[in-house]
Image 1: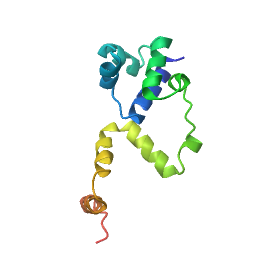
Image 2 (image 1 turned 90 degrees about the horizontal axis):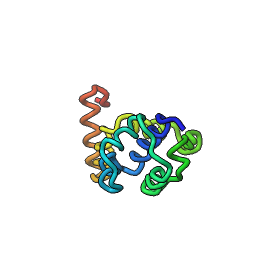
Image 3 (image 1 turned 90 degrees about the vertical axis):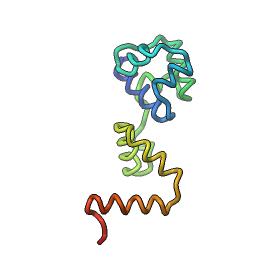
Image 4 (image 1 turned 45 degrees about the horizontal axis):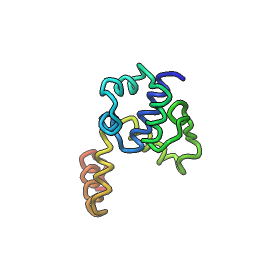
Length: 124
């Protein structure tokens, strides 16, 4: 197994579970630099540790060591797949998505109108 594949899958499943490297450190008792090395693709943990991480992230061990994601069937449409990929590649935007789930539809519409005006895409 390549270290980069494990790193890619670890970061993916951390994101999918709304977890961070710090969560792994705090919840499972790993050293911060060790987790950082895993996520950077510099090291791969031993099998017993991979099992613990898989259990923590509610995935199969195989999901962490190879890419079992089937892009053609996981999402029902291309827009959902593209949005999920964008969130994966740009986690700093996740806060906007999380915030949108906590407000009324009218507030979302208002913010969308403001963004449209700022980007000169409004229906004026």
